[in-house]
Image (cartoon, rainbow, N blue to C red):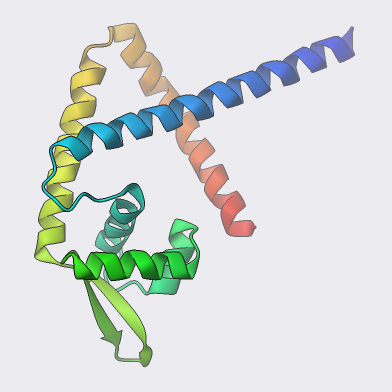
Length: 161
């Protein structure tokens, strides 16, 4: 009897995990798709926005540190940096302490673009969350601490791995 209960709990946990992961991915994809529609060219891909947001929060970050923070290969981040420099969103400055290393900074265009992106994302999510009934909004509020813990655990696992 106890093994049947344990087996059911494992099945329920797997089902919850799969449904949660699928739902989070779907929400992120839909938000990204909706935001892309009203942006001026060039369109920014998800990884490009993530890199810009990282540079915004850590001005002067190097490429290898950015790669670690984003959990991407260094050559992938270098490719993103080259594209963003070419499109006028990033400045690549030589590190005075190590002339071989680069330090990344946002351009004014990127700061404006991120501000616009952030504003439009907030408006989109507020609009859709406000359409939910109070019970659903409260359920989302109540789930946030658990989702933050989940994100922190995933982040720690990647850092340790």
